[in-house]
Every structure is written in C-alpha cells, then in structure tokens.
Length: 315
Image (cartoon, rainbow, N blue to C red; front, side, top):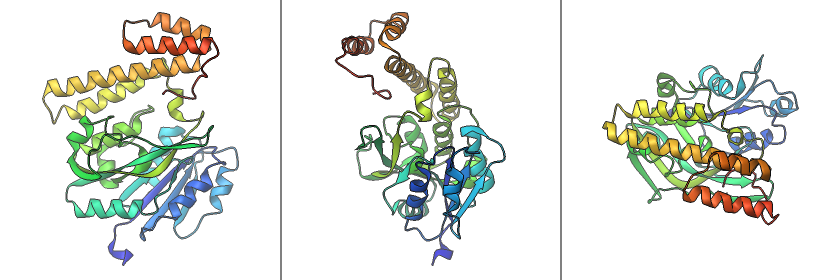
C-alpha cells in the first residue's frame, strides 16, 4: 500500500544538540505514515550529536555529517537540495519534536486530496524549557481546518500563526523551483514558505502537531539591532513576490505593518536582555510616545526595583 503513497521526508538539521537530537529522531520515527524517510544532517557537531544520531541509522533513517560547518541556513539548504528524496518534506530542527504521530499521514492526505495545494500548515506547541511549561501557540484560524489561497495565507502572516517550520509539510519539487533558503536571515524559512504558498493553495489546520523548544540557544533569540536589517530585507523579499498577486496598496500596507512589528520585536528583545541601566539607555535612545514604549518602561521600572525578572525571550 505504501508504494502507492508519495514518499515523505522529515529533514532534521542539527548542530551540537546532543541533549535533544534523539528525541527529535524518535518522534519522527513514531509517525504512522508508512512511506517515510528521516534524514539527519549534522552540521559538523563537536559534541555527541552525530554519535547519538548514528545509533538510529537504518532502513528509514539516513544520517549525514557535513565535512565543514555550513551554518544554519546552509544546512537547511543542503538537507533539502542534496539529501531529501521525498516529494513532500517537513523540516524538524534537532531540538524540537512531534507529539502527534498522525501529523505526516494527515498532511499527506490533505495535500493529495486537494488539487493545487502546495503545503499543509498546522499549529504547534511551545515548551518553555527553563520552567518546563508547555503551552499551545495561538492561531488566528477560525475553523478547525480549511483550504485557502496562498495569497490569503501570506496576508494572514503572522496573525494566522501557521508558519512554524516543524508543523508544515511542503512540496519539494516546487520548493526547489521557488528557491528555498536563499537569504541568510533568521526568517529564511518564513520567506521560503510564503513565496512557495503564492504558487498555489494552502491547507491550514489549527491542531498542534509538534513542539518548538524555547531555550536561550534558539536562533530567534539572537535577533538584535545589528541583524534586524536582514529580517526587514526578508519581509521585503516576500512583499516583492506578493506584489505579483495583489494591488500595490495591499502589499505596501502588509509590508509596512510587518516592518513595524519586527522593529518592536527587536526593541522588546533588547530591553529583555540588557541589564536595567543599559536597558534604560536603550529605551531613551528609542523613546516614543507609543503605548508599546510606555508598557516597556513600566516593565523596566519593575525590573529595576527587583519586582520582575527579565524574561528569557520577548513576550
């Protein structure tokens, strides 16, 4: 029966994640979809990550170690372009995991039953590792699941909350045609998935299917004033593709809103990371008469008085 089903690949790019990689692989192998391969691309880890992954090598699991470190984006690209063989692909970072064993099977059913669908996007959970707290990430999807145009999917970013890498199964041939992981940015996955979505339809599901692990080594935590320009360029790249499908006022308004949100996120992260004195200096340099800056000033006052701890990441 599996011979009649398209091959699906779960790609697991990893680097120095000995604490997590076994959990990721096991959650991928727990998937009930029968025609599945798991590809682990170790980006030259210096800890036991590769050795742990090798223990799972077998008929359904292929393990690779890059001869040189390609970096986060380079490893994503290498795994997709050179290692994955499936018609449909999901990208599971080495520190994340699936908790819905039927995720791939359900996604393949949706994409093959709905002509023109180029990706299936689902919800996810967040594990706040320091506290051991697990919560479901909110989505803006009104129904349990629906099929929408790729344009609506992109215009709904980030309100929809359905662009988490691990919870998306996408068409690999179209991804290669689109050009995935072209930008050296934290949002390179969002850029790739949004541009792919514009080539067809998206099947969206509210149900959470996996867990994103939130810790102080997340790539997203490295966002700063210095790297914000790359993220804005990423949004402009999406807007350029969106401009081929909607009138100029629509895509410009979308871009302006996303850029404002990105700048606020940078402010939030910087204020959360800096010691109180440095945070006050940062806030003064970026002062504004907005509710956002007022709220951040109140949080900073509480931190300065020892009544509030600095969060691990932006709230």
